[in-house]
Length: 240
Image: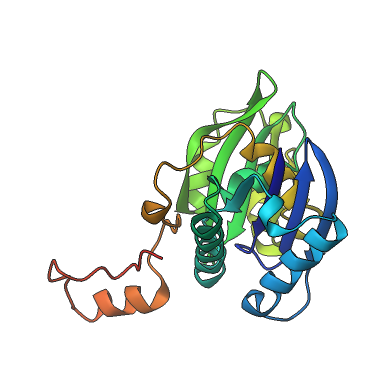
């Protein structure tokens, strides 16, 4: 199976072409450019390096969120357009699950995305029967609540992934014996996304596929904070 996979939900951009489990091309960019400028050229480049055209691809895999609102929305828009235009199956994988794939299989894996003000997007994953499984649903949460919920685990079994310096500080205060992978050593990897996609059911209707945001965008939050209400006819989270 020929899989085109990409993730723009985090600061780094990752694109890969994987064929029958082998990575033929992989681009990982942390350049200070907007993903909207680089995503299509990077897809084209990975295809060229793989000696394939977009029509050769059998499956489109995308990190569906949570993460950067604009980054998640961009990736899902590109994925839906390609899948619909080429009539190819589309698989959406949690961006947190993609991060969790960087951890050690023997650990309880806690992927994180810093959401500011001591909040985070977080999930809890564990490898069971050689498959990464979500054992506590992805959510937008305060770090205090997240860490309290993890008290039931042995500290040495926990591995936190993609922790910024501030999140590391909060974790170490409560779990000094836990393993922590900082954000530099746990970048999202589209090749791992492709692997996860192979065991994930494709979406039934591409048109109905929407990103996983887990919280309102700041503009929407400000809208409601000013007392505005949904009149029942307008969707404030645009379905791309």
